[in-house]
Length: 271
Image: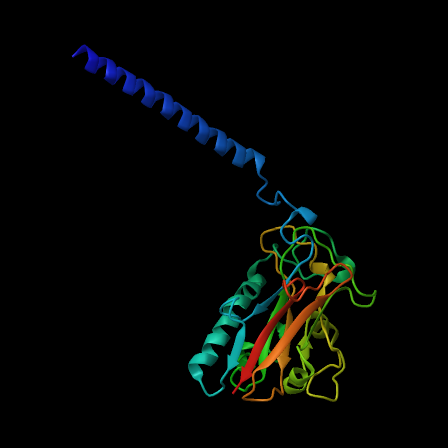
């Protein structure tokens, strides 16, 4: 039986060694993550990050990123409600912002201070709102565009007049452009300044929307609200699949259609 006792002692000894090593590793890992990783700042920033200081565009509502089709059927209540619910779910965080007293602020560009969370007023969407079902019950489709958040990135505007990032949308080809019809842009500047109404279907004559510079840079602060541009297609040719492209404009944004850098493409069908 002495050999059995020796085996048992060896087994207990090895178990103790491995338990100690495992516990030591867990304590080391916890210490490394707790003291060595900044929860508010990514380890890789700037050109070391995956986005390499070149933000992309995100579009709402899209159910799946690999299936970029917006199919609007005004007579189909179920399909209409899906798109409306998608828009509402996304905009809910902005609507809740009104209750975040002391956490978000109604900023003015000339009063901008880095590190302050500025509030984006969803009323800037104009006719793109819940009461109008975001245009999906009338075939006048609305979408929302925003930049993907890149830590520390600050836009270099195209000119001194437009403080921020321009956003444009057109058809991918000339035939798509004709079928798409006029494109209307609604943003915070339009809402606050009350730009004069144009003569066409859009309330202003601008062919772009603006993501105001006062919302940048993104510093991973809680309650941060990304600026938005609402885009409406009020006179789309029906029963035809239309290819649409949208892109961001700033001196430090590179547009690459194949890799969706600074841009996004999708298809629009209104029945």
